[in-house]
Length: 136
Image (cartoon, rainbow, N blue to C red):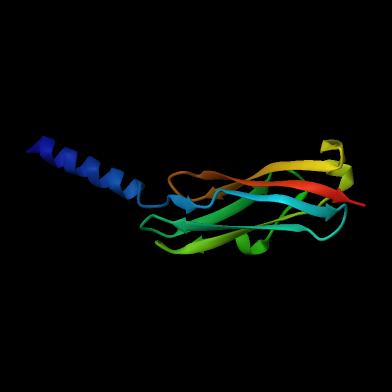
């Protein structure tokens, strides 16, 4: 009987720890071939993510791997169980940051964004990609 109670207790504890998260959805956005200008309009990426858990999932922080990425203040949010949220990332084409990566007028842009959550898996990585022809 003691063993049964112990097993049941461990099962309930493990069930509760998996109730938050996971975050699912689109983790890679590839804009393909695009044209852009240094210092021109930013390139926008919007990731749709879903809380597949049974408890609210908090997006605590969104951190870009490059200073050329700008995170939207609305990214800090709580996503209810079964609901979706949007993570917005803006890429600013700045020659002083990305200029060394251009070959023959083409920038193969491939950067990531880390999302920190309160879930069982505390960090997720999203990818922003594009092949950008730099216009004069």
